[in-house]
Image 1 (spheres, rainbow, N blue to C red):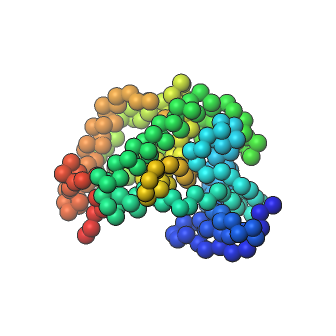
Image 2: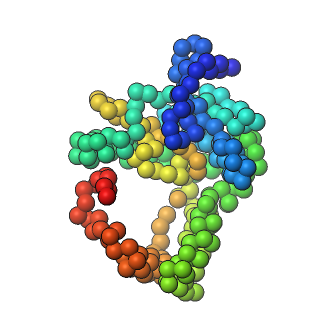
Length: 256
């Protein structure tokens, strides 16, 4: 049992840093109270716990924080505190990319190790995940992509970019690939951005991946064409946002 005696919320997320009665620091995450999102939030919490325990207990990997305790009825999980590491995006925004080249390499290495060590391990992962609640592996692999397909297509119509049958065909191919990628199936945190990797600001980066809320390529020319037409429509509608990103240094924040 872990007895948290005080905690401070880390805004704006549903995350807090707490102190136990043993004077140890921990990270506390909890579900939201919005009734409409309760089911989704519960699913996310169970998925994160399963993924983190799978990495640390089943595979013996130190790529992410360890789960110390969970209470799904209360909608809370307690994780290992990875301090004094800090989010890589904070360092990049502060200093730019060049001074943190080694930390970017450590981030890429951690992502590569995650894929390499978990490829072909779907069966033991889903075994662990199913012990925490019913899960449909195919739907789990698609995640929110299927929903984005429905909403995205309606939004393209509003922008005046009609969706052809060829685009629909490409989208179906993409979803089929995501649903059954064969030997390329691997565990992903689902949001592999610089804000979701913690590193030491000095010395060895010793990167750790965080936020595990739950991957093969083939050419999809018609879908690419749709994206090109959408980009053109957006440029006409909001010309002030038309920026040539090739001229912008990596991780440069946009200031208006």
